[in-house]
Image (cartoon, rainbow, N blue to C red; front, side, top):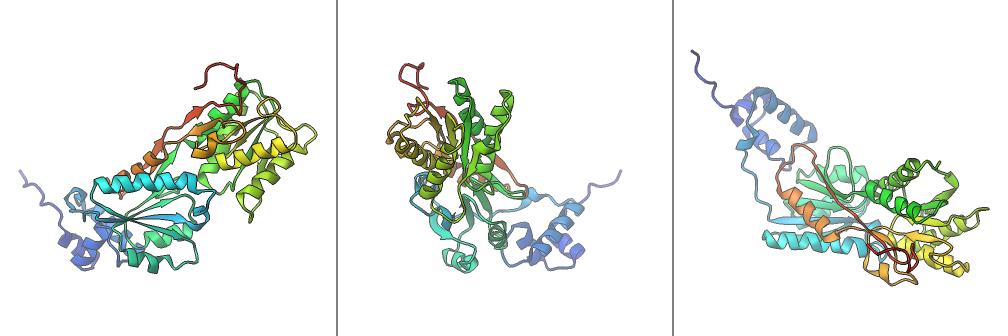
Length: 338
């Protein structure tokens, strides 16, 4: 009877791969100082030899950086991303982790800026260009995306597709038939998924999506101007919509003001639904029907996923959304509010 094979060590992998044990250790622990090609070569060698990855002693996360793209660091985006940041900060405080904040863009020399923060891990909230994420990943630090999804990255997202579906189905349920959608840039994962939910609900109801009822904000202008122009485009149609689903609450509130300025009554002439349930959703001419996201929980889930230590494979967490029915879609005598 043959003896059991000895466990594979870092020195065994180093000899097999032709590199130093230090290089093997850094690659297995996802530490900086190596090219992605070397890192992948070491991981392949370790897997081929049958190395037990459970033996790795991971470096404790003591400092974490929350990164927000500059395009989201605005007054319009703040009602969504500020609570996400606060949720991440609370989760870090409970774990004794110091959290720092960076607003970055693709031309900001992000690697040099990040070196000043010296984080052990990063959470990136909102849309980031793939090239910018690639530069962040090249630092070797654990990385989790919040409110974005990209192949090969761990992420935490609201159930955007279901939210778009629930919003559109609600408008169908209250008797609307010409349902439009105002979208932001469809390059953003969350907006694209909300649009997909909108289309799916129409399809399930046997309604053919009319491309004239799908309008995106023009590039290069602020949300206030873009949402107003988008709503006006819909109102100028020969048969304007009797309901509008907007990709977020800020756009929905602008659309509502545009409708009121045109002499329309909300919700009698046009029903409006937003997304996110920001604090100002109840402050408009009519309190806004919307999809509620627990934004602080979203930030906490991002930290939790990063601290789980499962970085060899991309993991995804999906947070539920809840339809909140208010006066922008129903008259006071329409059923109980949810």
